[in-house]
Amino acid sequence: MLLRAFLFFAFIFGVEWYAFQALTTVFGSGSLISTLYFSATGLIFLSILLYFNFSLRERLRIPRQLLMAIFFLLFIPKIFILPFMLTEDVVRLLKLGIDAAGGPDLGTGRSVLWDSIALIFSGGISLAFIYGALFNVYNYKVRKVPITLMDLPGSFNGLKVVQISDIHSGSLSDIKAVQKAVDRINALQPDLIFFTGDLVNNIAAEAVQFVDVFARLRAKHGVYSILGNHDYGDYMMWNDPSDKVKNLDTLKELHARMGWKLLLNEHIYIERDGEKIAVAGVENWSARGRFHSYGKLNEALQGIQDSLTVLLLSHDPSHWEAEILEHPTRVDITFSGHTHGMQFGMELFRFKWSPVQYLYKQWAGLYRNKEKYLYVNRGFGVIGYPGRVGILPEITLFTLYSAQDAASE
Image (cartoon, rainbow, N blue to C red; front, side, top):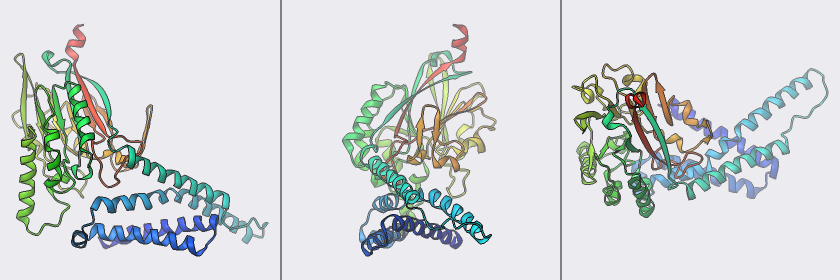
């Protein structure tokens, strides 16, 4: 733990040092520039310390989201200076080597032009973050995903399923914007609506103001939900363990008040014309050790006939390859969320990139292994950075088709 903390702060100091070098190379080391820069640096470190000091943060009544916003807006863009500065240092070292070997003096100072490019690029990232915070939090994108399933009963051909995930109520404030999103979902006339976890950031109270809004969601066969890692209150310091239990009980009650059927390691059947499919849901389960795992996949799938189509809700996509793919009960589609696409990246035509892909193999969109599918929703809300750049909030409409019907046509 101490080593990780040391490496974390060493990285921050390194980035700050490089960024300051670029700034002084271009603009000089005047007292005003230094004062402004190190004031901002101090604010970054203060935001980190308050973020991890729960009791002090609560006494000062400083929202955790505000601290994360300060960190993201003041520090993260500086990381993009690093590739430029490190490349420049490699060139400077080569020049030093040539000079030491008796070659011509090529000059080993920093380049004003190169460092200017680094600052411009970092400034562009800063502007993108500001734009994403101001305009993209509620800029919902409806993604339409057709999927053909081998054993989907004919009576379910054309089944429309809407998925939303990671609402993070504590980060949302514009109730009217959320209501418009609910209206867009209802306009899709879904047969089923799935919510795949993280209704809140930390505590159930965050969701209370949205209960009436999300209670207006309508689907022919109902709304089904699961819990995500943030829903359990694991990231809070509770005065008493019983408070954490009460918080989770309250959250479960809010799902019921909204008319959502919360699936806790269990399944239900949806019937049409004498045929049926199974909808199963597991509590949060992660292959990454830093997240608690409460999910019991065996319990969720127990008793399901082998011939049935199974739609599974599981918050963390790392669950898919770790347990679901090779499970004796065939799961046709797994619906996940959790990653948010890191709320930062690029999606252009078929090109898709985000830093989160270095942490999660499956992080956004549709994945397939033989005839089994995983879909990772990019999230409805935000957490940490209070905005989105390149990865917009998502409402997903799936249309499920029967391979049997397609073959007979």
